[in-house]
Image (cartoon, rainbow, N blue to C red; front, top):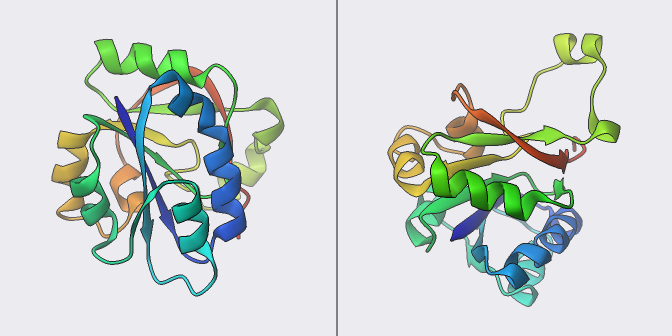
Length: 168
């Protein structure tokens, strides 16, 4: 089973969009729990998380969220990212046969033109990250954020799409 971790900072609307795309995974029994790791929000992010049945972690950052996650595999997402249909089967297949981390493919409408990619900073979590809890826990010892955990990892590309979160 999979635990979803989302690191937030004043992301109530974006969080709601992401959580809506996870409902199918919860119904299918693939998503065991969702942990929202907050970094000091002053909006209603905590209410959105609590109303959706998420575990809300207000201190300790991503490392605390990883410790509290119940699944053996973690799915790290940016608030505002939305998983496209078909992600459930692809993630379930990957976690049953692989040990290496994986990322989603960008949905066609979410792809950035080549020159824009070259001249803008690439967000390591833009395509999400599926990673074993053991590996994420080891990486979180030296990383203060979900973005830092995802940066520089060799990953497999999943045959499932993600609508990338818009930049703030």
